[in-house]
Length: 180
Image 1 (cartoon, rainbow, N blue to C red):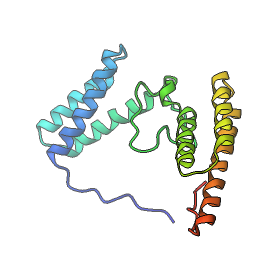
Image 2: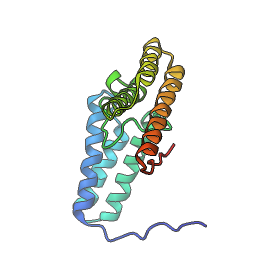
Image 3: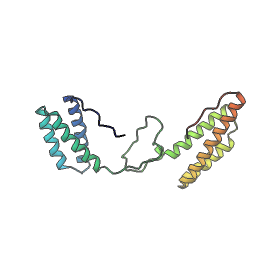
Image 4: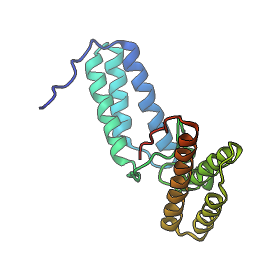
């Protein structure tokens, strides 16, 4: 079933002015990076004239055109099956640059599962095998073998899951379901 576009609401001058500021900021950044866009600069001046004349739809149309051209000029970013962070993550650095070690998803996942293993150890579970698996995963990651590291951290996660289920069975509580 095809959805119709949302109804257009009445534009306010503040909305268009805010959009204009965002577009102007993006153009300033391009100019500062040595990549000016004269066509978009002239369209921004035309949008300013339309905004001054209170022609909000015309100004919006010009700004949307500039915004679309700026977006099209940006390099494609890699799409992955998992986000780069867990919650409210803000990446540092440009999106087209390699991810720094402290932002590497796999490295952070190994650290997170290591912390989970520490929690399990404090609750009395045996986690020596899990910690050895995680040490091997970290070593594989350091060698650049991401596939092996990912497999090992998956195995460690499964070991922790099994220990949680065993602990729940002993305590009579229901195990927590995990999305995978």
